[in-house]
Image 1 (cartoon, one colour):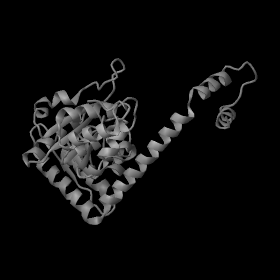
Image 2 (image 1 turned 30 degrees about the vertical axis):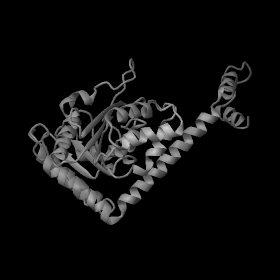
Image 3 (image 1 turned 90 degrees about the vertical axis):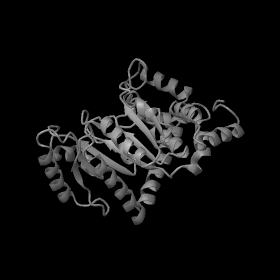
Image 4 (image 1 turned 45 degrees about the vertical axis):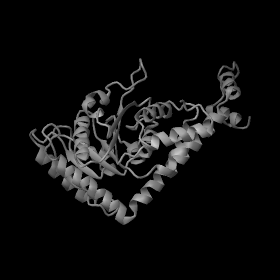
Length: 317
């Protein structure tokens, strides 16, 4: 069964996804990621069942141990009986167009657990840390009944704005020797994070770095009433992971009781609608005729025309 089917078949596929059918979920995610025909109709059919999962973003500079931390967090959630979906975003291969590192391979034993679904995605040119369709992939996992969805960002070392439009709780990972909290503040991570973790706590300087983060967070103040904590952890040994999980649950409880969860998700939804509309406008605008007209305008042998004048002319076509 494919997604290029009439609406009644789309509903059958949606029903299988809502029942947690692994093969159908996997096939649907591929088509949503590739934006195949029928994918938007499927997402529309799934929408009533979307919103139950707690979405967690794990971000931070390259090399801080995001994959190992995500694995440990996943194991803790499964130990509590909660089902988990992971959207692990890796750099895109310029040759294959796929994810270079493939976090799914690093978590291969966990991927055999029926309560876990791991999807590696390439960024495909996105510079904000998340793949373009990561949120839509998470919707499929959400509708399939996953309790927790973890986004692991690519770790671009820049401000990761994409994650703020996808996750309810954002964990910022760093490590001793990766730069101080002031540098993190310059990169925008202090604004993004809800929980700050100094990973690889066995390395020298971990406690000092935690203290620096705590000081900077005091200066920055609370985030919408949430006192943002900093702690140390060691993903290899598992130290600090239990504490991190408790903080994640505390943050979700805070969001729910304060009403901020609904407010945050409304903001996410608004942003997504704007993205969908902007993409459709661009697709409709840049038809064959306008592309040919643009090429002709650029190839003209007459006096050079400014980009502004060409844009104005294209709009009036």
